Image (cartoon, rainbow over all chains, first blue to last red; front, side):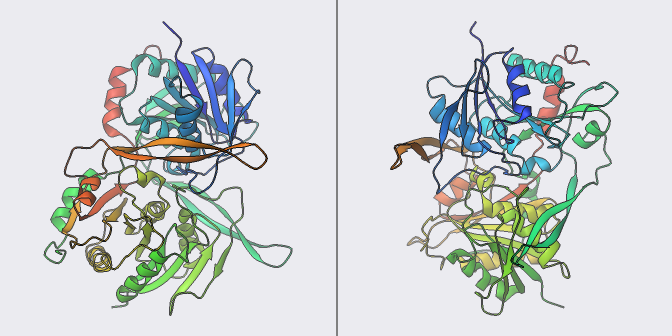
Length: 261
Length: 261
């Protein structure tokens, strides 16, 4: 049997530490191609490049691995991989990360890491986004490599339901070993934002987005709980945003007489 | 009773035609504040500005309406409105658009228009994104104004379930009048992408993202069907991406013995 072909992308950029760790693990599991942004793209959500041009260029920075850097977003990179760089042979799996920082709870919506994985799922591929809940650019990834490998092996063996991408988050390195793994739901938490007001050398005002993450979720079946308790969290994510329960409700509650044409 | 306070944003930028139409309708229904990007942000998905500064500045371009342009994304604009511009009085409703172009089906994931609405829902406000399925910058919006008003009145009267934002799409102007309105699910369709390869004056390669929208969905309860049949489509969208059905499945299918720590 031929080795699986694995596409690796991320949002911290092709020179980040996290993607090097991910590439090194994937090389044990299959043939690897990297298409990743040429610069950090954190917070890019599911942005794509429309109305502007894209660059993509081969680079030699991973031993024995074809790699391409792109001016585009993480979602662009997956599109570029499928429809341009890997036109002759489609990937069997798409992995993204390992992100320097948490993508639990609603952060999944802002996450470039997960947008690459979700774009992969939209294209019909099994897809996984990996994030380490440690924002440091020098974060220690040594405790997560075995987990990345185990989870990826499972997905390669068992496949993935159509329309699903996995959002995998790892607790930061601690004295205690990781306890295990939990399949979770997205926690009901949010960012409590503030804007830090400053003035530039010309006296013009500018702002920095700042804020704290606040967890309202008391459950023990969500990703925030898992990370706080030193478990690997896996949330299966879908790109069908329809709130199916709300369809019935709107049909019942709204005054349809007033809404006729 | 005091008039409701309505925040208006968009992704085509504060000078676009669509936002002018939306502001003019909202002025009939409440007090209006505009916080919108200073330039087009199409395809920005749920991007936010991290690691870079933001500008926000008052502008006088709508008669009798406080308006602010921002260097940020649509999601940034909603955060800026809530936590900076409108600190003293929170909005009762957030509306976004009217987008020049369709945001049906999976386009909702790439949509800056909908990211403003979804950010609103994340902040706990009733929120609606409006889009006209006509990409022209000179698109005719005259047939949709009455619908924007009717839908907004319903939402102001009935409120909205927590965690839901409405994705409203209008068919383009046709000879036949709009037939009515349907509460829909997101269609199972996708973009079939291609990259158009060109060379710049220095001989360096660049690419344009191009492609066609392909609808695989044969149902009559989805947004693509509604628009194709000259109905207004309303999809209730949620920001909880958890694929709850997949949690049970992964717990059953995966080989948990191999996945122990």
